[in-house]
Image (tube, rainbow, N blue to C red; front, side, top):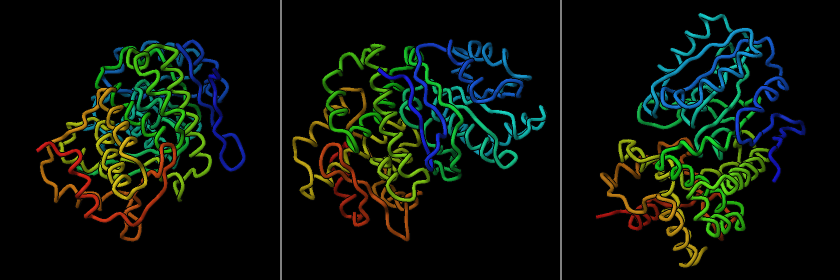
Length: 363
């Protein structure tokens, strides 16, 4: 299997995605993008740092003129402007300039936060994604979406800022808690549903190996999702239209995540959103009961919950209108008309969304 993908934007190579089994090749990749003699700040959290900081720090110090480390408290609660401000202080104190680099070592929170800091510090410096969670390896590290939460609203403040490199070590999945692995599978299943029916079937046919984190099965999952994400991002890098299909399951999913007080993982929340979106597609006659049931069955197999006791339905639906996917007062809702084909729909009504909640609400 190919272990490298190039993401091309506007007809030119923007960055490479490298899939490896260790950090042995990281030095060469950093040299290839011009890191020798530059300052590099490794941004990580206090959980991931215990596993991988020493290895990555050792690689970085071999080529950097100075290596700084900024570690924040792990979790979504740290994905704020306050954390970014603290990172700015470190960069200013170490006199980072626009030719230096940030390196995001961790999951989606770390990548989003570090990327946003890179996009805004000195009006933009380069950054590298070294994702350690499944959700980051298959989704959030690719495509240049960066951002932080504002109050209780996810990713409301952000910018598009492409990484200089994405370096994925598959072996990192071995230390991932089961809950986080399942969360990543929510985004993986989404990729199959929106763009590749054969990939979706592969996830089912190889479900035992994937769930047991067989290295080659996991490599196939990561590469397949990366390929899908690459194609979408190249076609629409700034989400002016087509790229919105990646938000399948996210409109209601983000609202469910907020309703849970963020106790649900992102992937679990997206899973609920996908069930609702598939329910709307089914009720419109776009997909069969069999397809709908397979989606629910697959989510459940990979450890994602399929029932949730909704606290406030009215507020949940109201929160969908505060989502960043609103456009001229209408929600760009993503539906599927068959496995592997998603489309943008601006006609989904609040009644349809309310009715779809019946499929997930554990009364």
